[in-house]
Image (cartoon, rainbow, N blue to C red):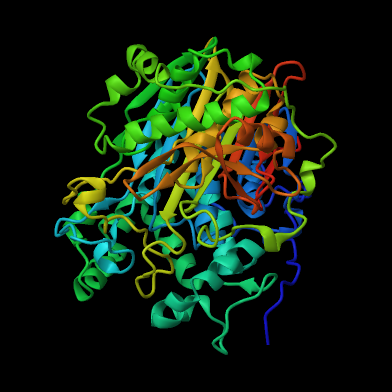
Length: 600
């Protein structure tokens, strides 16, 4: 029989302390309180069981006390609870990151990679490279290898989250990691997206006894949406990380277990590969776009394409373009920038790619056909109901949108001026589709790409991806933080939201849910983006209006219409609203994520 979710009881606080349901982690003594910098007693009670029904279901939220936006309601809940406990944005982002490893195990996790971008309260922007690193025995294949131990690298997510917390957080790590451990040890209800991704990966799950043990019911079937999913092995791994920190994962029993598994199955990751892994300070890229400072991270992340795209857009009167021209221009611009940066696998051309001179030369290559009429966005649509038909969502990034690979993005901000933007990923659905027995998490796909497609990759390399956490500020103050999931379409989605917000003056909600375009990648006749071709989002709820498509086609543009949700990336964002002195959070209408801020 399938195990269904049962509402969990709430542990009542001692000493008659009056708190809301959201305050679920209590210090041992009621006299102990968080004073804004540190606690006077780090000894904790066992955490109260979290009432999962308290998770927000709202795509948009406002709060004066901070904001979280993530791709899963329980991850957003984890971050919100930490803010309500007196934690800052670094604490909350760490809690969200670890929670996502539990509630989105097919697309993010302790075996994955990430990029972290942080703006401190004094306006300083810092980045941390937490990407996966090829093991010391890695040998690049001559043909593409998509699964197996041979393409696994050293994970960066645990080290990255721990460093973020150590350097910038203030709550005890026990408090910050408590939600993730709770969701793993006592279970959480599965959402349709996670179930769908497992259905898409069923063949790999059935073929591997370790995956089968974790992802199948006792009767050998896959779980259904709404089932209670318990991950005791991952809970034990999370507890070991909580208690032993970085060394527990990279030098302790976890490392020895991973190294033995890799040695037994032809993997390149050794114990030394793990023990020598370090978080590297990211190279920060920046531009000023129409008075706003835009910050991102360079290789192996792809914030460089965001910066190059915006620099190219400076050559165009974007504010006064009609919708067909805007859609085509954004597609062309981001296609150029993505190609420039991905062709620069190790970031050797970063300075060129973000220069004004290079942007001007690339802008001169772009021609926009004259339009015969001005088309506007379709009106009267309820974007909050975009998930009206879950069967129409490309949950696994495989059925439509070949490069809509699986990744997750989350943002956190606190009332004191700190903002964190993080992208985490396993690569494609289920990562490398292998898991080390007893640890409870999937390993990311890191290697496996031949030199003909990616250039030479060897031991110690951190292969480039499109993940691009982004922060926008003005006069040293955060204006917006955002990022996306979705492979090649990540940079395009981010740039389009920024342009909607800055150039067109849309609210953050409208900018995130407005229809998107994208360049069309092709392998033949040569790899690259197809000339004079644009892909257009034509979903029933938040797609382009027909007259926009017709106008482009009349001007000789090839339009590739896509009708499934989530193919054009999934954005999570937050912004500061100076008029109301509050934060607004927006989760992409095409996905299961939500936003939420502290209630007090």
